Image 1: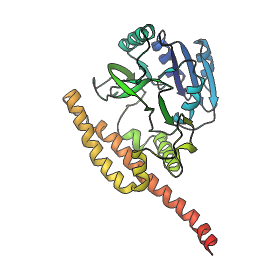
Image 2: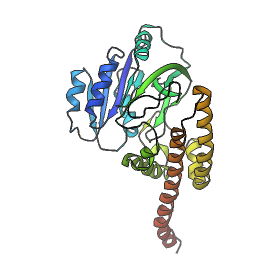
Image 3: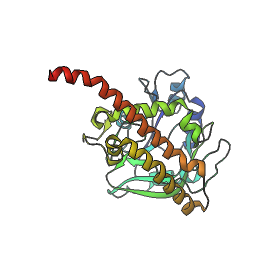
Image 4: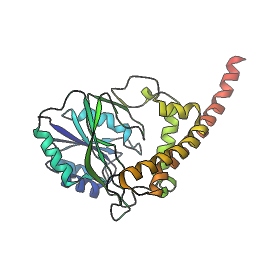
Length: 289
């Protein structure tokens, strides 16, 4: 029977964490919570009251650099990963309880994915889209490096499930406000752009040993402006197609959210790379002389 560790990375989100632990209670065997920066909201008390282990880490303004550390701290190989403002539906919780009593999945199964409905700040407005959100995985069958927008990379198959995780922040879970106004989005894009100047192995890694970037990141490194335009158009069209196939309706604002974010990311990398090249140019000229 597969035991399971619940892993979460938070930053002063006590009310969300309390909700997550209450909604997920009984659906896991071990709890690991990593805090991004100093704990100023008494998060440790919440975690320890739930018999979990709590770790403070240096402020990074994002969760991904902390996840390899969190994976290492988990007691079990099957990891259940939620953001602080997410929680499982009742159907998912029942599935998790059955999963823990069932035989171990086949060795070629690396992960399971689910549906993460759109949240408009008051209610969910979709039922079947977006799909493909990885929430449960075997840590010995996946790899990742600690950079925003980079999910775990499975070595085997991901089994899709018709189950829902509720993503209910105090704002919309989608939309241009999240991309253009939220300070967090600017932290993410700047961090990704700086990371792309180096190698994946310069980042915190979980079972990742290659200095080569996956294709989607290498395209940005090689052709940032071309990639920005292509993704703005093609990813929007793919999103609309996926929405129609699953919901028979369109969510226009949600369909452009990701593409606009990736286009801005490409432009940010182009800017950061130009600044970097200007800085190293004098040193190169001096060396050549």
